[in-house]
Each structure stands twice: as structure tokens, then as C-alpha cells.
Length: 227
Image (cartoon, rainbow, N blue to C red; front, top):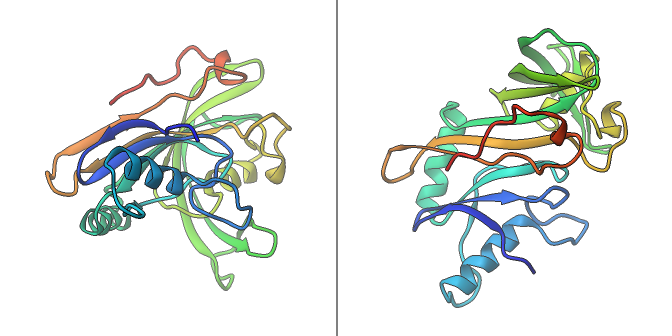
């Protein structure tokens, strides 16, 4: 098992880069998941007896790669979880889409997830079980009929970015589930997080650009690494 790419670690948190197509936590596939990989990394590095405690603060869909934050103590996990609820834990993504969109916009919808098919869709507000979803995006660059978007999530619904953009006729490249052109991988990358350190209370920022492969390599204005 390869060591995870670590952007930062201390006694309270670990910030690492999740590979694409790896589950955030154990699922029915039985494949190696990122939470277990981080636990094993900590156990070996710090010679912990048994399984090390690592708190899963947030998740990324299996096909989405990028920056994830883990807690090394239950207190840190609780404090970071509270920031997520208060929307002071900021998450931004890069997405490559087809279709025509305004240069920037805030999108609000109500989403309903079908647990049997693991597919979400936009529904009316009065639909039983519907959840409010909000994001904003900005078009950074265009190339060869594709658009590079920076997307900031205000809520964290299942497949939210994929569903909301596809609903407006701009599905993500590689997202066959929501009408996007097939590609080797889903073109969605969690490139930036910002939060208050759970004990120091200082604002921390971390980012990691996507791998320089198609279609990311088409764009010259990708955000640079920051940590």
C-alpha cells in the first residue's frame, strides 16, 4: 500500500490528497478506502498499538479526488464538524463541463436522492425528502469546447455539483451517470479547503491542483498549490 500524499499534519488534524476512484470510507466494494489508508499511515508512522483514531470530517464521492481533512482526536472532529454545519468550513472544487453556462452564478435547487440507484435529481421544494442545495461557480477558462469552473459549495448534498450543473445543460466531463461525455475519470477535483484549526483557532488554507492530464492539461489558469 502506497503512503498517502500528506499536505499537513499535527497532533489534531491531517490534511491529505485523496486519489480519484478510491472510496472516502469503507463501502460494499471492499476496496481499499482513504480513511483506512490514513489510519494505517498514522499507526505505522507513530507506532500506535492497534488501530489509530482518525475522525472522518467530510467525504468526497469515490470518483472525486482532492483535498480531505481528517481529525486525530474526537474533540477536533467535533469542532470541525460544527464548522461544517455553520458553513465556516469552506470547500472549493474544480470542474470541467460541456455546454453553455453564464460566466458566473449562484445556483439553488431542491434535490432528492434515490437510495436504490444512488442518483439524485432536482425536484420541487414540496417533494417529500427533498433537501435544499446551494452552490456558486465562476468560469475560469475555456478550451476546445470545454469550460473550467471554480465551484464553492454552500451545502453538501449527494452528487450536488454534478446534479446542479447537469440540470442546467452543462454536465461534467466523464460523468456518464448524469449525462456527461464518457472520459477515463470524472472531471471533478476538490482543490481547496479553509477552516479554523480546532485548537489554535487560526484560519488554515490548503489546496492541491488536479493531475496534469486530459482535460486538465488544456487549461493554463489552474489554481496553484497552496499549503
